[in-house]
Amino acid sequence: MSVVSSRLFIFFGLGLLLSLAVVAAIIIIVVYYANKRKPLEQGYVPQEPVSPRQEEIRKTLGETLKELRTERNMTQEFVAESLGISRQAVSKWENGTSEPSTTNLIAIGKLYEIPPEELLKKLV
Image (cartoon, rainbow, N blue to C red; front, side, top):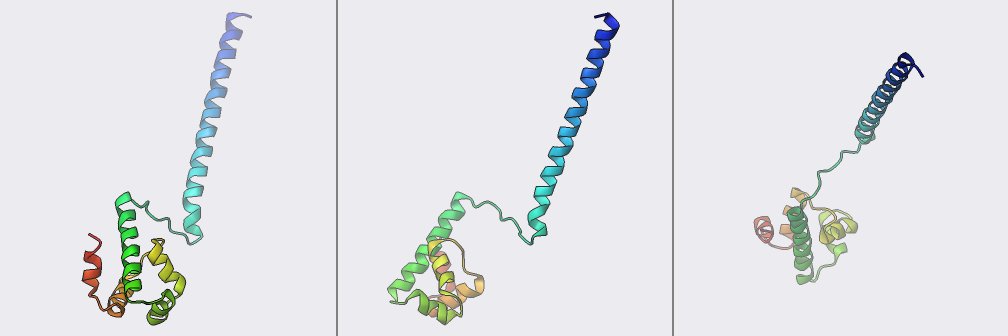
């Protein structure tokens, strides 16, 4: 192989390698942005990750709600009917899967005859 042909081979090889790198970068960018936008197009808004402290508070809120309910000899169904929500919503609050809205916290406070501020003070 002559010097000219070996230089052409190296030049052509480097050009091919550079082209493949550019194509790979474009594919990665397209896939990244397609996946990032896709959930928003479907009406899904991704939630922020929950910190360990927030998870602890969420569990404590659920435990507090369950404790208050059982102290008053109320069933989840009774609480749900009193608040105009589903029994599953009460269950989710108590097991920490979700949290009640501010309006529901106020209603829970009235139902359990405890000021909502006291309910929240128990969490800190």
